[in-house]
Image 1 (tube, rainbow, N blue to C red):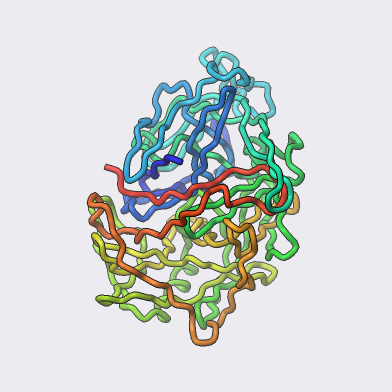
Image 2: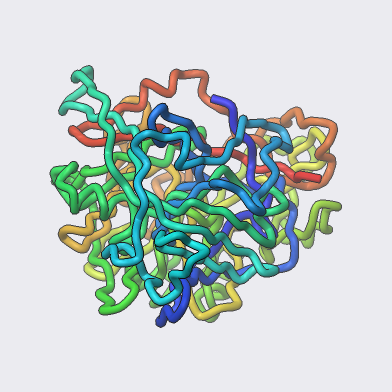
Length: 471
């Protein structure tokens, strides 16, 4: 599957819906100065829309609602690829699909009926604005079919193709970071609003449960399974109820870092569209201070690369020829007492071909919201059960579709003999990236088709892209 990495002013978009929508749908993104994009990674999927179907590379985002793709472009991102991967990107056109339908201004999906004008020819307009150098997507809503695979229960079960009617944005105008190739051939919002794909599938009775799961493999492969309500053995915590603009927001009562229990209490949005985890103070400082006190390496301020600064404050230098590190085991205690294991709290840095250090992959946030990014979900199957208003999770093998043997939650104390070391080996890097960046993660050679859901549902395969600096 050909893909290309994201290029955005801060790798990803950090979403928090505005309390009020007046003339347009607004998604708040926390944007800093440009950072080194070689450290960025997000989950993407190739999806097929329309009849005949056309494929699109879209970012998967539990922090937003609307699914949109470039369409009948007046001002869209360039369609040529960049970085260390490429993709054939294309716009969608309602005129080229026999199953495309207009979403009119009197539709229940239309949030902006008062903005309808002769210019939209009766179609419902949409606007999504991001707080990043005037970054936005706007156009009109359309209905067409999304091509999915329905899977029977159990390994090896038969599959069938399904064409699911959904509503999405025909993105005619993009601005800001999107014009630099900010990510993708569109964005698939997985939030709670009625216009999101999970909501539409559930409302049309196409899934058995108003729920979905995402499996985040540490080698960059995963799966999204619509209708997956989870399993009896999973850990759970309830979503925080909000009467307006609900999000996948959960409460944490403490953090377990190595041998210490850190007294922090905070709420956070579970956002697959964010590469890293963002915390406010005092939680950020308390967590990072405890982590630093338990690592063996010296804390170092790595200089910025030509592609931008590093967003991390807590980084550590490796000694020459060092081949392993022993970071403290990390977990978060949720409201109700369940442990949320964090299997990927660090990111390795490299200079040319040598791994030179690592950072605690948590960023200090400058807006009043905490975000659990996809790096804290790696190694887990995370269930967003909207029907029961709970978040579920299990340590999971996305290839074998089985719970990992060491599935019990992480303990506040290290295992006997200390935490398992994380092996480091020098990695080859392409000549275009000679600044500190993410040490490449070995990718499995296994087939994507090996990642099959345990239960019946509608599925998409998710390739994880490791972003590289695009110039």
